[in-house]
Figure 1 (spheres, rainbow, N blue to C red):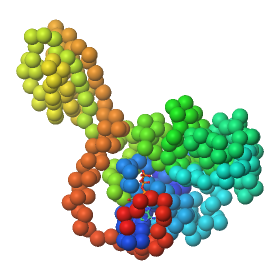
Figure 2: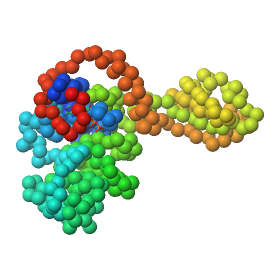
Figure 3: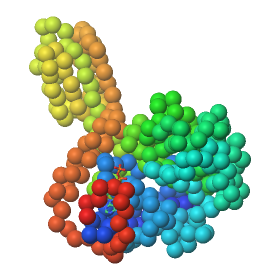
Figure 4: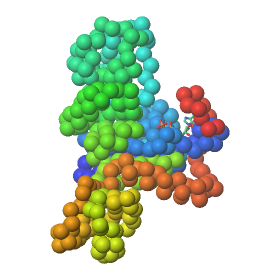
Amino acid sequence: MKTNGHEDVIEVTDLRRVYGGGFEAVRGITFSVGRGELFALLGTNGAGKTSTVELLEGLAPPSAGRVRVLGHDPYEERPAVRPRIGVMLQEGGFPSELTVAETVRMWAGCTSGARSTEEALEMVGLARRAGVRVKQLSGGEKRRLDLALALLGRPEVLFLDEPTTGLDAEGRRATWELVRELRDGGTTVLLTTHYLEEAEGLAERLAILHEGRIAATGTPAEVTASQPSRIAFDLPDGYFLGDLPPLAELGVTDHETAGRTVRLRTNELQRTATRLLLWAERARVELGGLDIRSASLEEAFLQIAREASGRSDASESAGSAGTVETTARTRKGAAV
Ligand SMILES: Nc1ncnc2c1ncn2[C@@H]1O[C@H](COP(=O)(O)OP(=O)(O)OP(=O)(O)O)[C@@H](O)[C@H]1O
């Protein structure tokens, strides 16, 4: 199969993950990621992102459905897949007494074709911290060390589970730059993140997960295009909403006013904006603080999650499929 003209490197078909106690964290999701693509999995807390990524990394078998990474089953054929992927888990664990450089060297010992310790630390901006014990690193520095280890074996596929959580603004930007460079160099990246601007800026395509299902998927532009755009302005003294042309004629779907401020929503931004501005020109009206903008990914995300919540409340009685995972993880306050 091919996605956007690229050979599929990750294929997920009707994937399900059921934890002990019968809780279904992943409820039948399907998506694919082409070689060299950066795909973001977004979702509210507990949406099932980590549960999905762990199946892709081969850390557990699916309860039902199918996963292929580089053409292999990552759980059943782990030896074929593991050397070709890099994994940055949400909570990495390092021996705290080792220094940063010792940690990388130890990891390099188990990695074939590893980068040099210097190169790996340079890439993530930790070169100057090489001699520091891991226990003395800040939370953000530990995330960068995690990233260095994930990059060590020059992976074809990189799994990044919330890579910038805990990083300051500069660290986040540096990580984005690095991830972009890796993608441009042909690395396939699957990213989970809570930062919507991270997904908007980095991902070619994304999926929004909600309660174990894909609620929306597409390019960031496609996902935001499903939401109305906004136009806001202040009317001058003596003018009222009723002085505008009929809102339906402008293509406005929703509006609100607060004093002289008018906020319009539309699914036809160009048409609404053009008609509004033509009216203002003809009527010689100055629209103060004029602000015209498409929906942001954040707005789209919130709206999609709200809509999906409504839908899942209605279909909660639907049954689940597949085998149940019996080894409970202790990492999260699980709903079991
Ligand atoms: N070992 C487990 N046993 C039972 N339930 C679990 C287990 N691990 C996770 N869960 C539950 O599965 C659901 C999905 O969790 P998951 O960690 O995949 O979500 P997430 O989208 O990564 O969330 P977050 O953004 O908060 O990290 C949650 O309700 C979580 O409590």
